[in-house]
Image (tube, rainbow, N blue to C red; front, top):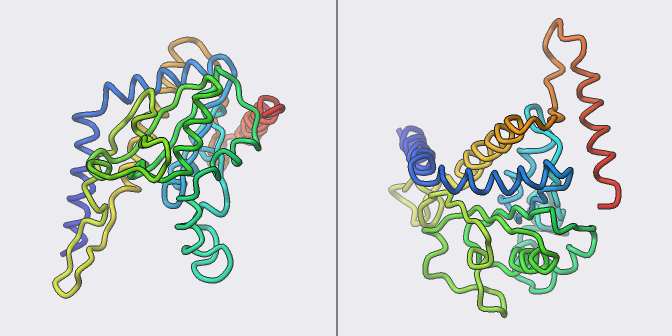
Length: 253
C-alpha cells in the first residue's frame, strides 16, 4: 500500500531530524529561551504551507506565551484557490522583493527579540526580506528548512543570498528533494509530501526544548491548558491568565 510507503518516508524524515539535528535544535531553542526569559518575543514567519508550523505552535493546547505568529493572509493558503487572492497570486507575491520589508513595517521589534523563519527552499524574496530586516534591527535569525531542497538553487533576491545564508542558526528538516515522496505508476508527479511533517516535528522538538530550558531557569510559563478535562476546575482561569499575559506583552509590538 502506498499509505505505508508515505508513512515510512515520514518516519525516515523524523528519524533523520533526531539523528542529525538535536544539537542545532538545542542551540536554536536556547536563543528563543533567552528572548522569552526577557519577556520579549520569538517572531515566527513563513509563506504557503510554511505557515502551518506557525499556526500549529501558538495559540493551542500545550503552547505557551512567547511566540508571536506573523501571519500575512495573502501568503497563506487560507484564501481562494482560484479567483481573488488565489494560489497564482500567492506564488507571485512570495517572489516579490520588497514585500517582506513592507510587512515588517507593521510591527515594532526589539534587539532582544528573535525571528524564526520557515522556508522549504530558502530562495523566495519575501522570507529573505524579513530576515534582512530582522538582522538590521539586531535580532538573531533562525531558519528551518530543507538542506537537500536548497542545494544548488539560485536565490530570487537581489542580494544574491539565500535565507539559509542569512541565518544565525539553521535546522535542517531533512526533507528530500521535491518534497512529494510517493510515485504513481501512471503519472509523472509524485504525491504524499513530507515537508509539513518535517516542520511540525522540528517545531515541537524545539518548543519543548525551549520549555525545558526556561523551566530549568525557574521562568514561569503561561501555558494554554486543555479545558475539556472533566474535573479540572481551574483550566479556564489558567487559559485566561495565559491570554492576559499575551495581551500585556503584545502591547507596543
